[in-house]
Image (cartoon, rainbow, N blue to C red; front, side):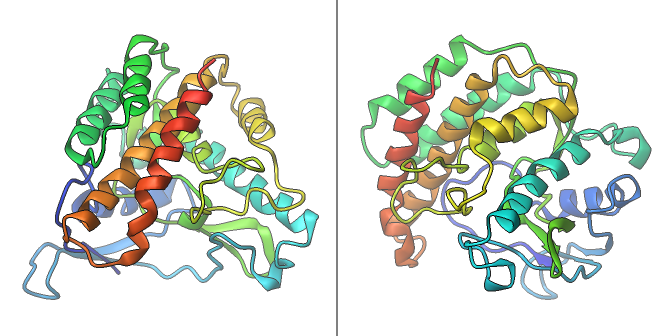
Length: 292
């Protein structure tokens, strides 16, 4: 079941759009078997307090910041490599899907997608600005001034990362499900790569308290090797990948700023969000460093 949680404060357009997610998951399974099939949608908030949809259950293991003991607890380089590879390989599989094969060829508006992304995240930063951080503005202007030509559009997830998928309990290299499709659209596939790489930290890069994937575990693909693996399998020209890596880190910084300012305003009481301002600064600085 996917309910829409109540939210107050600046959030991305399309955040937890249950109607959109139901539409995607009621069709995508036909062409991408990692997508759980949605079976029912309820838009009446009086039922459980928010719109929601029902989807099939996919038993599996969701790996977050640490590798679970069943896969070696982070000490098994072979298992770690499988986990890192399956994130890339499953993304490749999604980007190969023909949207027309699952009646999603009218999803979104791929023309001008990159421009809208940069403009939209710059606007969200203005709304979530919790402090004067000049480097965030500098990176936003850099992105706007150096926008690359996009490859042909594909279906994109828009929040691709390890903990949005489940792997087989018996094999960390087998993906059994991918979740959180509320921002799925058609657009530039390299934005999925950039967003994923924003938290694909090499040793010494991760901000304190932000470990979304165990990317420094022994055997885990480096960021450069992960991008190369994606390029080899898709055939996409990644000569402009630095732009997408900068964009991904900057976008993730804005997302953390959105959460942090909600905490500052008392719109959420979760004190885990108290340190996200520092993490956002760190990501803005990483974005600046990743500029060629």
